[in-house]
Image (cartoon, rainbow, N blue to C red; front, side, top):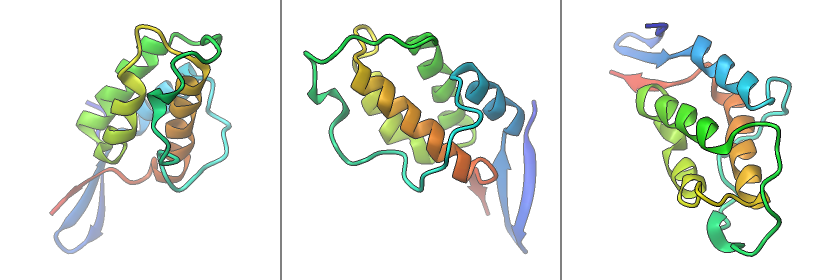
Length: 118
């Protein structure tokens, strides 16, 4: 299943999925991204509905689905930001891609942490 269990205290563990996380990072072309501490800037992601059309090398909906898997299984801390970016996945704009990239950059700082089990 690819789950890594990291003991952080006497009765506390992180459950992570490093292999899947790295594959998703590669699929989004963000393996070498710089890290950030938060998964969102706080601005509403869907605010710019008339913005520039999405034009990245990666498939938006596919990446969103991969990130949803990680949010459900090891990284619940990205769920809100991901939900905001996924709301308009049928017609993504460039600002939605920037939100997804922000989530990837957040993974650079948190990929060794995951679901806290105690």
